[in-house]
Image (cartoon, rainbow, N blue to C red; front, side):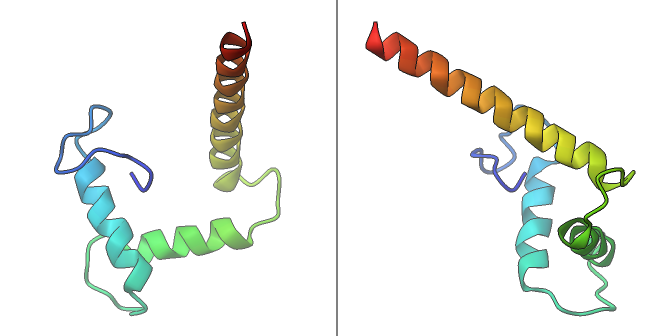
Length: 88
């Protein structure tokens, strides 16, 4: 959701995107350890863990890191293919 280019609930991937964008915006500013906004405290806890975690076998962070790696590899492949098409 943080990187989704679609606005106003128009995301074709998930109907949760707009709500997640609002949550991301809130989380970026919130420092209240007892915040009552749904999912704020738990999301900040998970994000904090993710940023501090160094365990490559972590059951929480591992799948996220793997998904990010796969996505980055896919983007690199697409860029290489585009570059090859430009050169031909």
